[in-house]
Image (cartoon, rainbow, N blue to C red; front, side):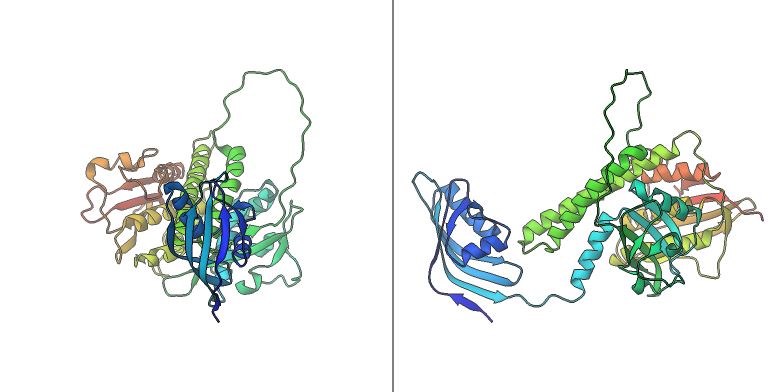
Amino acid sequence: MTQVERIAITARSDAADHLVSADEPLASLQLRCGGVIPGAIAVPELREVVAKARGFGLKMARPILAQDGTDTIRAWIEVTPQADAQGGCLIALRNWQATPLPPEPADLASRRRMEIDRALAELTARLDAAQGVLTVDADAPDLAECAAAMRAGIGRHWTQFVTLKDLSHRAPLHWRLLDGVELTVPGSVRVWRATLVPQSGGDGGIAGFELCLNSDSPMAVELVPVVQVVAQPVAAPPVIGRELAPVLRQPIARIIANAETIRTRLAGPLAAEYAAYAGDIATAGQHLMGLVEDLADIEVIEGAGFAPAADRIDLADVARRAAGILSVRAREKGITIAAPGEETHLPAVGEFRRVLQILLNLIGNAIRYSPENSVISLILTRTPHLARIAVADQGPGIPPGDALRVFDKFERLGRSGDGGSGLGLYISRRLARAMGGELSVDAASKIGARFVLDLPADQG
């Protein structure tokens, strides 16, 4: 039901566009929008009109629209600059109308919470359809023991590496029963909460999950006494490395999560243009997070003694898993990923998670540069000594003269604004070669780009 306030509502601002006094119900709206009195004007459209009137020195009148989380507010505003010591404006609002907002869809808040959990997760793992671990990445030092155990137990159900609170049943549970469950982790004194994000497959079923572990408690920091030592010449420490990357991930993740909270208006009502600004901040944060991850990967693969595991894998199965993980992103552009069928197998030798990383990069690039409603094909072949998979798209392709440059560090062939760092292909080729294989681009491809990953064939 719409509530209408007929009596004029007055307020006063100062030269800094701070609200110094206000009648009801404007005073309450200022507080509900996160402001104080006196304090900066918290209602975006009101602040904009007041700033323009004061800046131009002209009386301004116009309708304004605001939201306080429960109501939509409409009013007619008149702002008159004042030539006195305060240097602010006299504000008058008429025909104040408050209309209750329509009820929010039941699943909207849960979707927003899921996105925040994903951005702030201190451990993220990719799971298959049976909730078996595929890959894992942990930021917090007290999760290192759990992450190492998961990497050593690829394929096992993720609950085998943690202790579920208030759930004594250890057999695999339906994922909906595990979504949101509290748990403890070996090596950590904090209580954790699991978030399971299903990943849809090409047939509409669930192809896998993203597991995120979050804790409401920050990790305790041990204070170390300062000891004066004589400086000794040492080699320069790595730029990113195992020490700096976790430090960077947490604040960047919080920037992304806070920007997403603002963009989705979870923290309160906001004008569309400000929500768009928050979306730009979130996108920039995600790009920066990807760059940190890529730089950390480079340090690992370029380090002395790096040697991927020589696992016996099914390259066709890895391709299907990678296609399933990226199927949602592909469908957003109407793109079809033509993955090998379940009956197809191609034995190869290589570290499972590194091969999956390469294919995720190749397919992700294909999605990024392919036109809408096109097809990305994953094509398997075998020679006596090699297992081969080609990722072919229908995008603009790679000019023959750029076939070698595309694998250089930070090389993006003049592209800008697409969220890439120019490191993915460099890392992927280094990984392929470290596993005794090769990553190349077919410069003779006449339609789109065609990247080819070769791995040693499993002769067993």
